[in-house]
Length: 553
Image (cartoon, rainbow, N blue to C red; front, top):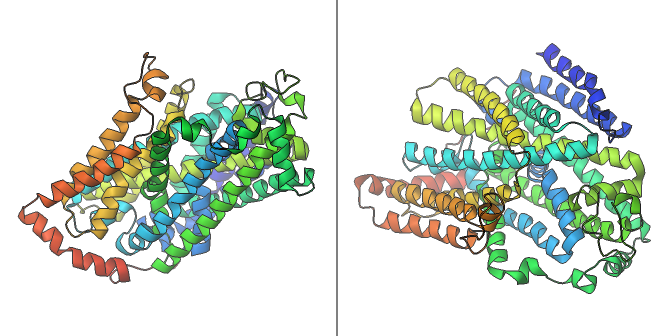
C-alpha cells in the first residue's frame, strides 16, 4: 500500500515535462502542486491503516470533531468553479455577482435549523438512512440513489470539465492528461483512505483556500491604502458600466422570477446535496453536527466576502496591466471581452498582478487542491449511494456482510472515477455551465422536500414521498433541458420552451404539494403504520437515543 502511494506521487513528479508542453506553467505552481500530492499521499497511507469497516469508510468512524468537520464542509462546498466564477461575475457585473455568493451562503441556516441535528441522530452513513427510518426501504433508497447519482454525475462532469480547462491554463498540461490526473487522485484518496483521507484532503484544501484568499484580498486592499471606498471608486471609474456596477442589474431586474428561482435552488439545494449531507454522519453527536454548520457557515461566509474584494480589486487593478488582455482599448470598453482566458480567470490574473509568479503559483496549487477535494467528496457519496443504498439495502435486502459492502463500495469508487474521466473528456467542448445549477435544482426539488417532510410531518407516507420526490426530480430536469441554456445553447434550437433557466420556483412547491396530496390520500395499512412510527422517529431525532456513537481507533 505504502509503496503504491509513493510510486504514484513519484509518477506525478516524473510527469513534470508535460507541464512545460505549452510553456504556460511556472516553477512555483509545479513545486506546490507536487508538494500537495506528496502530502496527501502520506495522509492517504495513514488513513488507509484506519479504514477497516464500513463505518470507517463512509463516516471516518464518526470521530471527526465539529471544528474539523466545519473546515471539511467548507473544503467540500467551495469549489474552484464557485471561487473563480463568483470573482469573475463580480468582475463583469459587480453587485449581481454578490447575489450568487449570498445564495450559496443562505442555504446553511436551512441546514442547521432543519436537518443537521436530525441527520446525525437518525442516520448511519447517508441521508437515505434518514428517509427510510420509518418509510419503506426500497422506494426510498431507490429515490435517494437516483437523485443522488444524477446530482453527483452533473457535479462531476461540471467539475472535471472546468478543472481540466483550468489546469490547462494554470499548468500548461494537455486537457486529457489533467482530467486523468484528477480522476486518478480522486480514486486513490477514496479507494484507500475513504472518508478519513477525504476529510483531511478537504481540510487542507480549506486552509489553503482561506489563506490564499485572505492574502490576495489583503494585497488588493494594501494597493489602496486599506481603503475599500477607494477601491470601489476606482472600479466604478474604470468599468464600462460605471455607477451601474454598484446597483442590481440584469441578473435581478432582467428576470425577477428567474433570480428568485435561482435563489430558492441555492438556498434549499444545499440541504439536499448528498456529498454535503454525508458529512454530518462523521461527527460524534448532534452537538458536534451543529458546531460543524456554525464553523462551516463562518468559513464559507468569510470566503465569499473575500470574493467581493477580489472581484472589485480585479476591476480596479487589472486594467493597469495590459499584458493580461489580448488588446485592451484605451477607454477600457473591451475589458470584459479581451481578458486572456476569459473573465473567470480574473482572480488568477489578479494574483499575478499583486503577488507576482509566487502568488500565482500558490493560487494555482490551491485551485488544484480545491478540485481534488470536491471530486473526492462526490465520489465517496456516489459509492455510498451504490453500495449502501442500492446493493446492501435494495438488492441484498440487508443480508450483505460488511466485507461485501466494502468491496462494492471500492468497486463503485473505481467505476465512478473512470466514468468521471471519460465524461470529462466527452464533454470537453460542451457548454456545461448549466449542470451545477441543475444539480442544485434537483437537490432542492427531490431530496430536500422528501428529507424535511419525512422527519417533520407525521402524515408523510412512502407513496407521497416517492411520487413527490420523483415528480420534483423529473420536472426540474425537464425544465432545464427545455430552457435556453440547454435547448438553444446545447441542442441548437431556435427558441427555448421554458421561459427562464431555473425551475426552483415551480419544482420545489410542486414536490412539496405532491408529497402532501399523495400522502393524505394514502389510506393503506402501510401508511397507518408509518404515521404511527413518527413518534419514535421524533424521540430519536431529538435525543439521539439508540444511535451508535463514534468508534475509537
